[in-house]
Amino acid sequence: MSAATTIKTDRLLLRKIISEDIQNIYKGLSQPDVIKYYGISFTSLEATEEQMIWYRELEESETGIWWAICSTDGQIFYGAGGFNNLSKQHKKAEIGFWLIPEFWGKGLMQEAFPLICNYGFEVLELNRIEGFVESDNINCKKAIEKLNFKHEGTMRDCEVKDGKFLSIDIYSKLKTD
Image 1 (cartoon, rainbow, N blue to C red):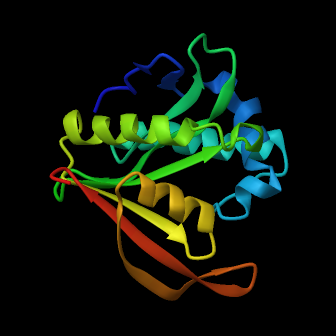
Image 2 (image 1 turned 180 degrees about the vertical axis):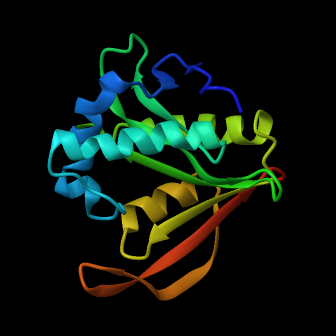
């Protein structure tokens, strides 16, 4: 897999995540509203380097690809999105996404998500894209359903977070959907 391809629309630029993005990654992944339903969080810029390494290792190992989601001029960083747990053998990957809260409710996810999915289906030749959403994350579940992902079921009490069990809803979109 080559480095992340730049994808551009009238309003968005999806580009490779670079080391200079660390401030914005930290800004997003240290916000309580973002990390409430996200698997990781960071309390310092230094700790955020772990995430930057993860983004690089995904591409190097060919197990995923993530983009910085920005304004078309690249000046405003909205968030990040992409694929992880990519399986070439099974032609599937897990989609992930987060936005800095000040950009919520502006239709950015509705615009960027299909771009990422199209890249997965057309360039990565995926047949299936999976989304795993914490059952309590009502807004994300509504958004992913609007994007024609199908709810396949719920894994009940399958993970522990902050000492409590949580359930995960499984969504998928097939190339033929």
